Length: 181
Image (cartoon, helix red, strand yellow):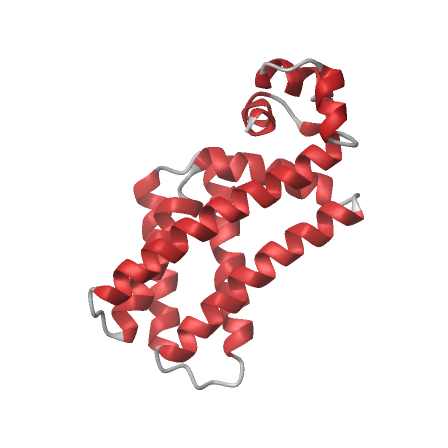
């Protein structure tokens, strides 16, 4: 969480263990006791963010299913969660932009980020199949949806899109996906 806060203020490349420790209220040797390197802290941050959002998604999905939504409304609910809890969270998008930059040159971070996005795409594909998607390219469609979500999220930060505009982009694309199912 301290690294997350640090990345909101400056790039990972110039963030130091000392910065992270100061933000966490720990001295750098204590951080080195728990983490091998700054990149190790980053890997743990990726796991933390993913675990937190996956748990929130699972709770959202259980609640939506308990409400007895039909499969298409369940998909709309899923897209709503992705929009509001992930894509429209500009702080999260900014932090992930930093993570992506590290992932370009660090194999471990790259593998972890790929795993996260692959799991989101697999979960989305499973839900799309349940909503009537018997297309053989459903996995590709789900991956495209995840890529679109992330791209719009990054663009919203980069270009300073307003939430309503970003939301309308997402909803328009998601309705087209539901039409194809």
